[in-house]
Structure formats: C-alpha cells, structure tokens
Image (cartoon, rainbow, N blue to C red; front, side, top):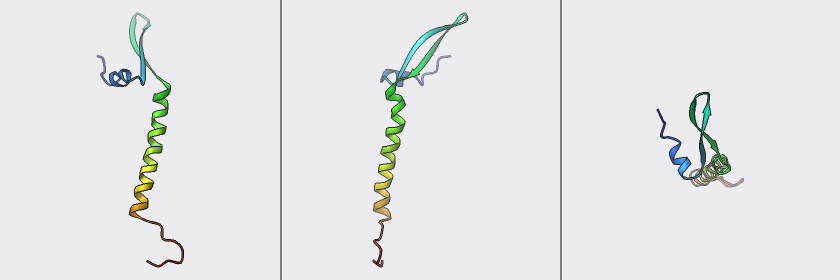
Length: 68
C-alpha cells in the first residue's frame, strides 16, 4: 500500500523521492532537502515572536516604582 502523505511535500519541493531496489523489491525512498530541514527552525522562531508579542499585550511589564 502506498501512503499519500509524502506526495504534497514532494510536490512543493521539500522531499526528493526515488525508487530503489532492495533485494527483489523496488521501494520508494525519500530524502529531506535543505529547505525542509530549516522549516521547523523558522516556524519555531516565528511562533516564539508571535507568542512574545501577544504576551506583552496581555501581560504588560510594569516599570519598577509604578503602582498599578
């Protein structure tokens, strides 16, 4: 059975797939390219920036000496 999950990442260029012979069977093998390896890092950075911005609005820091 072929699994459809790798189709979209391969179509948009995040995966490279090829067929390889393993014993008497041919298998589809996938490899991440550089963009796919960097995607989680950039998404995590963007998420951290977003949560910091929202946090500063919801819970602003009160300067020392100022009562609320």
